[in-house]
Length: 330
Image 1 (cartoon, rainbow, N blue to C red):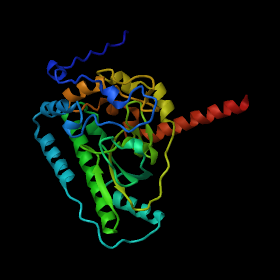
Image 2: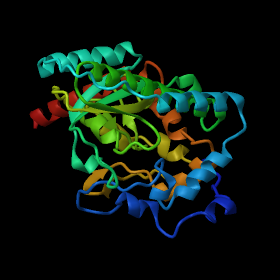
Image 3: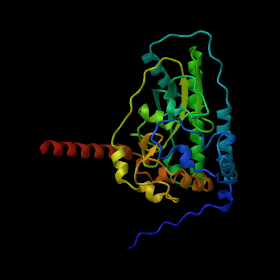
Image 4: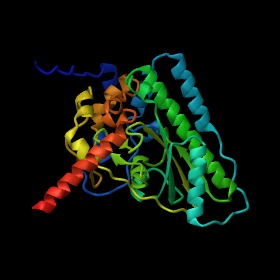
């Protein structure tokens, strides 16, 4: 039986008329061998990026769905909420104590995972300044039953809802830090964030980068959405977590085969001095814009299935142990 041919996606003429005379891949630094800060490209103030008109196109394409609208309004309200001013009394504790307390606050505020790492210049978008060097990353999980409907409205509602929750947790952490007399800024996890969130999340132990360009976590798979807080509070840094995702993605083609615009390749790319999995921006964005933010790659990822990540980790560990044994026998 012949393999079913994937229908070729053709972007609308209306959208392509708004496409700038520059490649998004070039802005992202595809093929560049030198480490540098990223440039604004999407989900920033429209006048900061040549793709600003396409951001408006995305908004205009959103279906007139009441639940989608109400969820967006609720998330917007969370994002607009102000953080109470910093206390004039600074409390002193050890970095270990502060780190433990911050994670407790984040988890009690509905976060699934909280990590801490040190800011790097190459994570800050080049038109912004981030004033504090300690980064607290918040992870919240999406409901798989909603995610698996991508690219339909229920999946889009879930994405917006969980970004709202990430903002809520980030705000709670920043508010708590201010009460202790230290500086903090909550960046939530969606529009106008002045820094990348995936690299620090990887650095502080959230998991590994998948072929689909998103984090794969050992417990929550590909279902995480992120938020961030930066602070001058002295904190202990977490370590990264590797459990075989890279090898798994080399041999898996689930997201690659499912991607309608063929934006996911089989090989890693050099991007701003780092070799990593990369999703072709110029192929991905047109489909993303016309399909409520898509999300198909996350929905079909084997790691997204409930209760599957731990089984996959065991299989990968067994495979690695066998390979080590074979090496020792030579």
